[in-house]
Image (tube, rainbow over the protein chains, first blue to last red):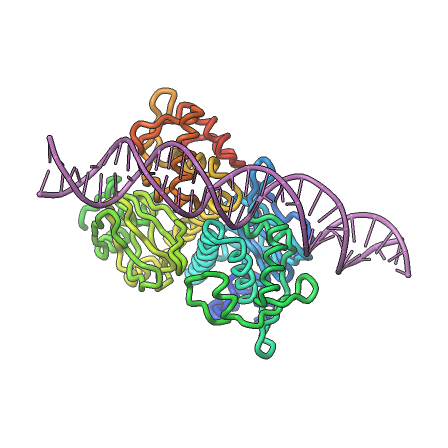
Length: 242
Length: 242
DNA sequence: AGCAAACCTTGATCCTGATCAAGTTCTCAA
DNA sequence: TTGAGAACTTGATCAGGATCAAGGTTTGCT
């Protein structure tokens, strides 16, 4: 039997393997998945799929950042998903994209042809369970996001966004938390249902008030995490960093 | 073997049976589900579960209307889900509610104890598939809703809400479409991220402009469906009623 | 029928975030 | 190194929807 590489890098390529349930896949199942996968790299700004396109694959993000978005006929758009490395793209059982997928930085995806992927997963209960779990995670995120879009002030929206980023991308450095924003101000405005000017102004306000420090435009330091939690106005007791 | 009742009424009680895939459940599976189910009726305004509560059941709506909502410490809240008869409540594999569930009218649920429900579904691929499908449907709805919350004007929000209601609850009567709103103005404002006053004013404006006719406060007639579609500003080609 | 409470409407005013309009700072390629 | 375009900031003004306030209507209970 061929040796299977279970190192983190490979692990991240299989949408089923992340979050430590890799162990539940048999070597045969992993080999089967490895046979039907292929990598593809998109330049920053590239469109991966457009709403309505036939979806012939599922994929997982190897590196880079992608966004999901929906738009109106007149061009107004709203980001509805943010995809970071190890995140899953795709709707098993659906054949059309119901939103646009765009690379916001150079993006490498590990694709799986959809038909054979579904064949592999079809009869594998723990994989189906994992797919339910992925969908429920996304649903929770979407609903948290709805609260943000519907009821939060501009300042709270920015703070909430920083919080979300900090949770996934933040690194503790002594007392304070260091992170590199994955989005431009423009993309942040699409995320938060604001204009770019408001994003810029509120970032400046939070900086002025000592909630954050900026190094250049994308590098952010959070001196006091609980202060940021307050600013975000969240109810969730997520006082912890993963 | 006991006779199984496959009439629509019973069918709607099982979260797996709706949408015409009942046929994929064997008689044994249906019997197993029937053993672990129980009905419960909640008065209008009752809280079904609160965020953070342990969730010991999944359920499906038999009659009435329920809402999912999230709130902030200071009381601001956003509705994040609207549940009508045949809709599914519950997060298989999760043990805590991540939002509040409230009965907005008298509500009857068909509950299934979660543990045995998961046992029944665990080894049944077509049921797992159905659960993925349910979760993806909710996700699509949530993302559509995010576009509404983030980018639509008050008038567009109202029109979009009427559209959603019309699709699920509307009845053709000659040329025009008749429907009874499932929510009060107050609940509509929570749905749409508006205040009750704005909802009231925009309903009045749409009435004044001939987009709708009101009979009392909840009965709505849409004389021209395509007009409503325009007002909603949607991109989706959903020009059809189910 | 009569009353209270919930629900809804309408008006006046205010304020947050959008829009319009320059300017400044990065980034990166030649 | 320099120049061009992208990304970002800042200021002035505007407007959509929130807020405050009052009154009207419906519903349900006794």
